[in-house]
Image (cartoon, rainbow, N blue to C red; front, top):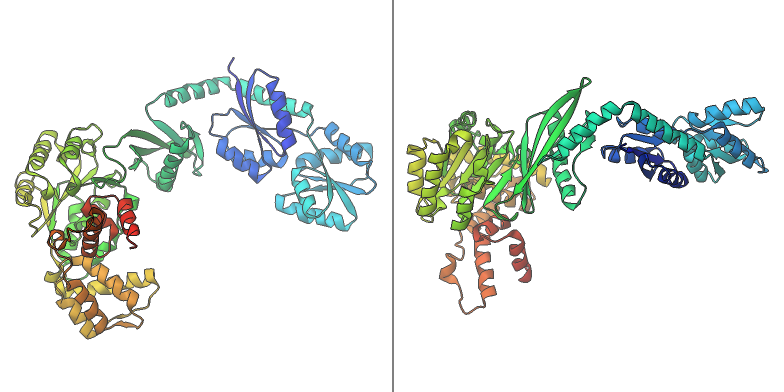
Length: 595
């Protein structure tokens, strides 16, 4: 016959040891003994209840707390009259005054026993753990120096420098509780057989399962606790509140060399809603630090304040309206614009407000795709291109080689990728760096029939700059703890007349620096003039033009990094992406040279 799995939560160490010894003498149970009183015991039960136990045994107030918290049946380890009488007899050898104190499970027995034996002993019943100290303080004032009590009373007595004798449960009471637990489970054996059957079915699947109760506590888990699964559980916790509210969501994250996919659904039992989370894993295509593929989910997307830049004036209201309307469509969309016009952020908005916002958002950056990586992306079963009802953003396919671009066109035609998923593309205008841009644009617009969203450069919307800066100044004031009102008239004229070659990215960067250095209510002309002069000062130019080739290789690498870092306005993440190195490598090189 299958053994009954029992979790024992004892309020003190001695009881846990006794329970373990008694359990070892039986062959019908598999028992785990833990020590924890009241809230500590409650926490232990909450953490372990989902580990496929059949029943819990505990004592007194701890048992009551556990019973109110978990769904498993809880059996009390009782205090017998003999247990209390034994303790009283021991205390009668004490010369001072003593009282009996504890929760009702102890004091109700004690009161009956004292009435029968006509013992004149004060009896104090605790209503809560917090009430215990106050109750014993009153007893101490009346001359009490010894307390016969449960674990809560013992802890309270220590705080008041009172002596205490713990009323312990004897082996008879513990064995009775174990017997009762076994009978309780055996009487519901058909239910437990069903439970075991479903559990075996779940644990033999090629996926893991988590089930949460209506309060969000873990009710069932098929996961084995190890270092990897700790990270996985943190990932689940990030989205748990959303999972509890909205069903049928799908999120993904790469952890080391694996991609984990979470899907949730709601189950109803006894008019209560439970949340089931399934976890599937697959091999990642590239290392975790690789910039080729990035996975986002709705809650960690870019903030929607980006709309401020496209709804700040009548001139640009049309762009804001187009973004809003395009987001509702499932048709592929092509975003075109110069560097810094916000194509990535628009892609994020299209995803967040689009039809597949409950599924992952994959960004494939073609600048980081060599031939080998591109072939893997096209051919692997684990590729995001094999997704269904997801948003796939292919960034700057103009950076692909001619061979790679042709493979992309063929893949799009043969797999119906645009019908299975929402496709977004972006192309950089006016850049000689990407020779395939014209070919790719022609295919996307004329063969794939993409909706086209052209993001204008900032110099073509100079009249919007006062409105844009006003909105962004407010947000920076909040984040940086400033109280800047705006720009002096002459200072704003400089801002509107500047060419902004890096567009919105550059404007945000300049605004932040101006706010940091400004100590007056208005940003002044001289500060703006100085800042914009720095922006127009030529950088080192093309790295190859000014490199000192008489340096060591490490020194040349450092000079290249400094050049790109300046062009990216100090943004180390963008710098590492452009150079095709990890952020940790970039940090190490800069650190070695004292940056």
